[in-house]
Length: 431
Ligand code: BES
Ligand code: ZN
Image 1 (cartoon, protein in one colour):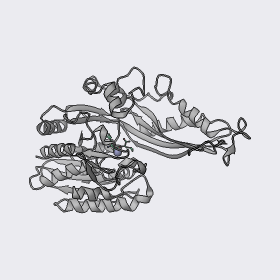
Image 2 (tube, rainbow, N blue to C red):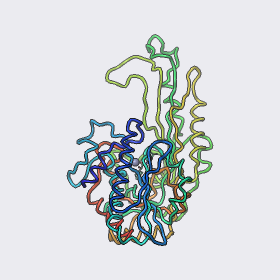
Image 3 (cartoon, rainbow, N blue to C red):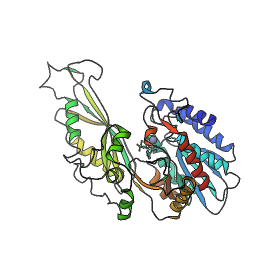
Image 4 (cartoon, rainbow, N blue to C red):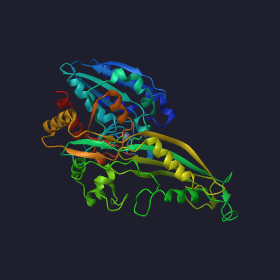
């Protein structure tokens, strides 16, 4: 707990350039910690500035590569946190703090298990812990092929996922891919009086919401021509396992405060979450958003979007398709601008009948006493597809997060009993 508090105290927010030195300090601290129990470590620089913590321990005929991330999401809105996001605080069986679960907390049980097994490892364990997962893993992706020789492995273990029922362990068998972008519609050179200019000047805010409204059709399906062309259907075996995902509409409401009525009509939750693509608006910014009325035509309007990719969609091509679709609709007199865009990574599919999955499954059965669930997750870990390709390793994704951990939100936490389960799982995995 004490050391985890030190880890959490670093404001390693990869998305905000202000925190670049905190990211580096966090990487140095982590590398020193690993060295402390015999891991031979190295900080690998990346073109984007956040170093990768690399390390090796143990020996044997096989290798397991552990991937994780030391960066975290921004803590905002700060006023909604009950305690300081960067001071690990224990209450009611949980530890609170940014990164308490995603991913510092989960990484911590893996590290503690490898530490406990340090003298009896039957294989070589390689750590690859990056500082930019939460903003698309751009730096690591660029250096992957240059460190190919260092990351060759048989198994890739990632503990950065969750489960739906705390009594049951989960193997995550798929992740969606992801692109994100910010678009801006530029109009008048200053905010205009909405009476003097209303009906004469084009309104960037109005234009943007209209454009965004065309992304989906009335059935919730993405309305961009060609968008689904390369989407691969799930295998029968995958779908059968995915549909066992034990969630009802009422449960979903209990967890989120909203009924699961988003996305494509007539498709199951498991299918919509794990196998279908989605475009979501992450944020909108335009005009007067503070209290009270203000009669203006805003000079600009911005939207942040994320695109979750189904299996086999190409991030770059899809990003281009979406961008052009929006751009072509820009009304006369207004300008379309891309503020930021990232084709982060492809969707991952874990082979169901691989020895690596069997190993993780056995470790889960031993540590939890029950058969694990198979989950096709809607979230993303952008670098994983490239990492499996370059390392040659078969991925296994096991995590103990729960929806109520509120990752990426205020008051992120990790349930201590879930941490214990993670630790026991990892001990079995490396036993
Ligand atoms: N740990 C999450 C991914 C995750 C969340 C897996 C919930 C399973 C359940 C990871 O840190 C994450 O948040 N990824 C981002 C990547 C993006 C910012 C490029 C995501 O999915 O939004
Ligand atoms: Zn995250």
